[in-house]
Image (cartoon, rainbow, N blue to C red; front, side):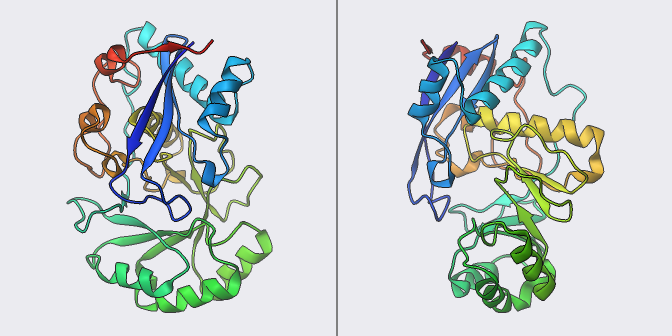
Length: 299
């Protein structure tokens, strides 16, 4: 097993809980394929150092387990000389807002971060083109029902355009039910390991989650990670959509534009488009770029 440490640099702050602009991670090479470990410690992940240490000890952490699963899937296709994208169609994605002031053509929906200041969020929505649907990710920063109702009241002019609010506050079934009953707003749940009722939209990050059982609606997203991890999320979404298309809503698979375009992997994916275009090659792709990296043994 081998790894290559990378460092992505964002164009703007990507998460209100993580006001940094540099993001360390590691690509893995194992079983003839590749995977990605991209921790967000601010959201509860172990650090990169801890994940690599656990790999060295033979007891991979949550991100390491999923990266190794990606390696197995990618490696099997590469050994057979096949592309993982054959016969699959990547679902459409919303546009994840970063530092941009203009939305690229073709997107029907945008996703924006919503913090604890309703007026700032209102001003940002006001600047968006009127034809776009809106998804808001609060990252659980609101304090409960009263603060959400305050936010929802501020956003009254755009209620019909708001598709859902993701993680308004830490998940508690009774609290979320009260929010939904009072406002009529659809809610989406991210980073939850338990069994959530199907009436909540589930945000699925394949870099962290390997199961998405149930019958509820799903929004597959990247972890705002390296393009290798981004492609794994897109493959999982495409595979689910091929089997149960009614479950898969517009996804969040287009996130490479949030990072420095000078990175060769970011550059290879091209400008953001509503449907992520996978690179040519075997497995997930990126054959030449991955081969050129300096790899080190994990142990």
